[in-house]
Amino acid sequence: MTLQVGILYSRIRRDEKLLLNELRERGHEVEKIDVRKQAFDIQEAGEAFDDLDLVIDRCLATSRSLYATRFCEAYGIPVVNSNETAEVCADKVKNSLALEAAGVPTPATKVAFTKESALEAIESFGYPCVLKPVVGSWGRLMAKIDSKSAAEAILEHKATLGHYEHKVFYVQEFVDKPGRDMRVLAVDGEPIAAMARSSEHWLTNAAKGAKTEPFELDDEALELVEKASDAVGGGLLGVDLMETGDSYTVHEVNHTVEFKALNDAVDIDVPGAVVDWLEEKAQSEADTRSMEVRA
Amino acid sequence: MNRAENRRGCGRDDGRRPPPGTNYLFDDIRKRNRGLKLFNTVRGCFRTLNFTNIFEGFKGYHRRGWSTMTQCVECGADLTLHADLEVGEIVDCTTCGAELEVIDVEPPVLEKAPELEEDWGE
Ligand SMILES: Nc1ncnc2c1ncn2[C@@H]1O[C@H](COP(=O)(O)OP(=O)(O)OP(=O)(O)O)[C@@H](O)[C@H]1O
Ligand SMILES: [Zn+2]
Image 1 (tube, each protein chain N blue to C red):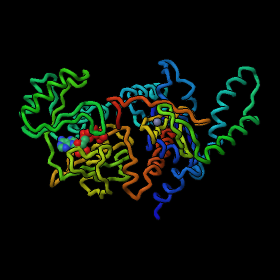
Image 2 (cartoon, each protein chain N blue to C red; image 1 turned 180 degrees about the vertical axis):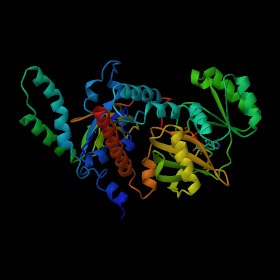
Image 3 (cartoon, each protein chain N blue to C red; image 1 turned 90 degrees about the vertical axis):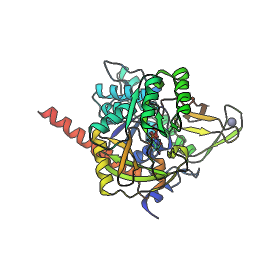
Image 4 (cartoon, chains in turn red, purple; image 1 turned 180 degrees about the horizontal axis):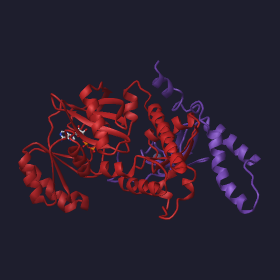
């Protein structure tokens, strides 16, 4: 079936372009929706949303992603990812809580609201440990803390100069990983492709220039990816894992996942596989709706 | 050559031709018709295609088949834009390094891109 697909965006990255090209190549109609130009009405959907079978949320800004997906759901349009998934993934605290609750191994984490209690949390983990902003990406504003004096300085700076979200201190044990972590792109828990990202630096984000290579998932990793995906409500996700020696730990799940680096690293046609899944998803949504109409 | 390479190698960035099957022509027409359709519905008649649409569509396809030139809005240097330019995309000025957002593609209009914000990311 030919689909009418809406893409929520504010910036077309190479990832979005890969998706757009793949969708158009298959004859689907694409409605690019620049969220900066929308005024979302609580009563009815704007013209841009007419006749859409599916919306893909590719908003760069977390706040926009959360509201825009909420509106899509209010308008009765299936959206990838769901608002529920976005809510959990957009916030590192909710992300960690969801993984922990689902029994997915995730680094030990504590959250504190004042620099005094944050320092206590840091001391309880010992050095080094990690301090992360609760919202944000690409490894930005992440701190590896090596000493008490460094901890005090960072907390002081955050408390004084930071935006209110930086007054939520997310403190995590430092995982002594072997110079790399893994990114798995998965659709409803089923991996499309995976890569290892290695760097001399403790931050191994592709956005920070880490070296990437394909990574073969073993049974344990496969199971963790599935559980991690379920934990956040499923969808098109980027599951990040670190090796702990005998097993893995999942440090986060991303909901507006970038895949250009992965597409370059592996032999798999990543946008092709993503669109395969989107087509299935749209079909099953349409089936459910027609069943509802008949019932 | 495997499938992925094959797909990726099909002229996306070589500045010469859009990827096979890229249906800019009809995409453009559909966009124009959205406005038209509304207008015409109000007037009580319905028209989906006219010659201007078709002509504009071909023009767009043709122009996008080759790289276009424009000027950097920051430094004024000449800028060569690749073939499959997309509204919302960011291009870097090779002269001054400015990040420019593509506002329109026909003809290309660029604006200084908004600064990166803290809550941006995956
Ligand atoms: N607890 C930890 N111990 C050691 N290294 C870590 C830890 N947490 C994160 N890292 C490293 O830092 C990098 C960035 O971490 P994380 O994914 O949490 O940040 P991010 O900014 O949300 O990145 P993105 O959203 O782009 O994946 C990871 O790739 C990993 O290599
Ligand atoms: Zn310039």
